[in-house]
Image (cartoon, rainbow, N blue to C red):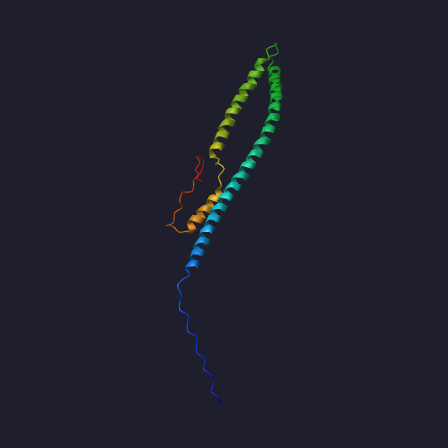
Length: 164
């Protein structure tokens, strides 16, 4: 029998120094991704605000059209109510202004109540803010750890009517 050739075990590779080019490329890649992420967050905030303001503008336009119709409907109804009050209270001596004063007084009372309700609702409402984009920016900031700081503090929005 012929002796089998002995195979030498390959030498284990020595850990080489990290390739400076690949380390630099990795750092540049991370930096580019961070910039891209920040740009995407800005675009998200723009899209959110654009969508919210678009809805507000559409609502305002429809409300303006309704307001014109309601104005004329209310004017005609109030004239009718004033004439009805004048007739109902027997003020039929040619002095129809008493019916108009009565209707005006009721309108002042209803307007005051409606104004107070509207004031409370406006005070409780929050301004349109890009909450999703702010939340994502906070997650991005938190992903770098507690000791890392953004070059700015993200804005915080508070309103008088709630805990937000």
